[in-house]
Image 1 (cartoon, helix red, strand yellow):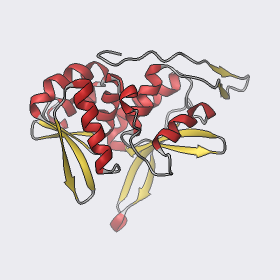
Image 2 (cartoon, one colour):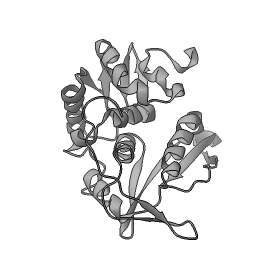
Image 3 (cartoon, rainbow, N blue to C red):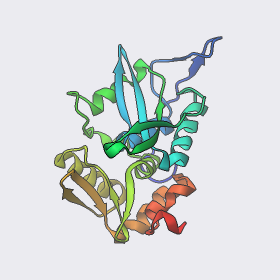
Image 4 (tube, rainbow, N blue to C red):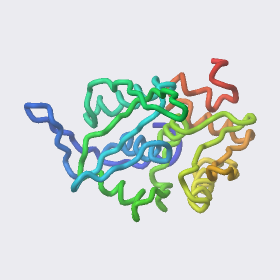
Length: 227
């Protein structure tokens, strides 16, 4: 992990039984795992309570297959999800159009409950007030890969699911932690965050080392087709 604000979070082991079913020790997880979860929760990942434990799910279009496979490998290599590669699925959309997608689920663990509580204190997804603690450069890179897009030489983060107050908090943290100038754009679907063109060089210095090649176009100021 590179850049500022990389707090050390102690490792916890993942123990496997003879049948390879993982058992999580209750306690802290590695900073890279926490960063991935927090960054993706700012995007399309959602947390789900299952009995007394929590699991995380990422569902995205097959157009983002390389990112999804990287996301899966990151978790599977560390014992956090089924190592079998996700299978492409279909769903019927408006007008009978077929959409292709992948879904990735982590294993459930009570040691994730605090993250669920932070993002869903009343059952609705919010931005935790202590997001600055976990918005590492790696978390920022994951957030961008998950939900960022090129816009007028800057970058737009699709934060429609969050309130304007939550978006203001995120803008404030991006400025305080990384010196990024941002504004909130509001459309019919909700607010989003725009990173100014003059901040893109600084943004690239923090996130490019943590982004997979196919996602780097999102901070390079051109469309995916240019790559």
